[in-house]
Figure (cartoon, rainbow, N blue to C red):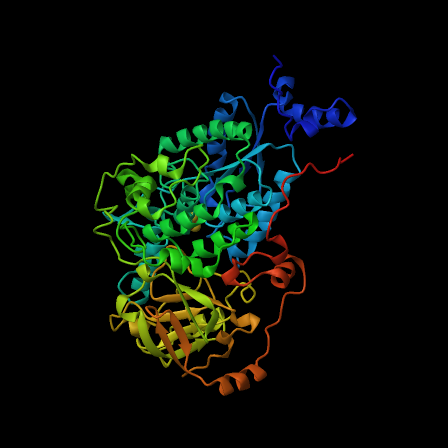
Length: 574
Ligand code: FES
């Protein structure tokens, strides 16, 4: 009988050589104290870490990586942690989204250029999740995701307050004269009182849920709070599992199928997830070669009810969600809508993973028969104002505004908006539609989260808390309102949004999926002839980005990054 042949791993192209270059690769690694036998052909696991003190939501990732390493060693692998560009949503200007694609390039090239057989992606703050998924997908090695987990519930004066959502609410109260600046400042340290990412169902929690629904992380990844020791346990189990995945050659492309993306879209509706998931999943799908379209979001998800009563659409927070059963409980509730055969990173199908998932609190996670909100998925509206589509999240909007006709009050850019919105002389009332231009991928640049424009104080003082707002921007996943986003093509690319003028009438009809500017084609042609494209950046990343970024309906990836190159071993360095 012949012995089973030991697989030759990718990392052995570095460490397994008996020559000068083998010496170089091994000797310098050994300066960290590693014994020779760790380089004997066992799976080398790269731990791709977005730790940074400038990304507070990922500030505990050094500690989390240690638990991943434990698991890797236990399973017979050799872990090597490496940093990649980190994107802190609350610190980075002009917007973290401007750097999502840049970070994905860092991830892709760091994986491909190094002696790595499998990858653990440590993801948390909003853009770190799609950036890492995108970069890793373009390499397509065995890869597993691990999210950092949400913060504990914010607590302020006896009440729970949620990341972001509470900020938007309280800042409107300050503007309406209902809250003092002193109280507002006091709330800062009460809202974010533990490690972790935003604890509302904002973009971070949405993307962590997407990672789990896609099958790219172990069950429970989405909701275990960062401060709960079970997050560390999950990290350790993740470390163990990636070694097995390398042995099984379970690559990303075997998990990220069309079926997996369909599951994620439906899940996004059931959790009332962020509109940002649209743009990120389109980009991830593009990297792994799956045909996914903006319209798929409407077709697959818009009729699905929201089952979780979580902020920003509802009352509770991620900590409550975890104790109620977390994402597995939601997935079990919508199981008849899912592709249950979709494989996941633990080697089981998603159907097997959720078969017995319990729900412990029906207030937080509703049964499908009594949903929190009906038909809650993302809706895609189109018309002469958005020929390639725009996005709205009906579960975060006001029911009575989903069908609305109003007079446009136009702001050419965010600076003009800030300069005018608080002016009592501004000709605006609650029936108007606020239109914001030049905040899309090219225009901002980077497609900032400014689409949920604050309301004019004179409208707020009358007691109105929502108006229709339209822009080519995104909005924070923690935000809410009747907000039409991602209008494509954007104003800076010459989209019709650029041509809207004060006083034009606009019709929004979400049930009919319509967004119409009531201006004749002739008049629009006249305006187009007079339109001047804004100046574009002259150098550096900004220039590369603006020259190559695709429009929102395609996922805003750079045109030359779409697709993948696998992970062939590059030529020698010396
Ligand atoms: Fe980092 Fe919300 S700001 S997760």
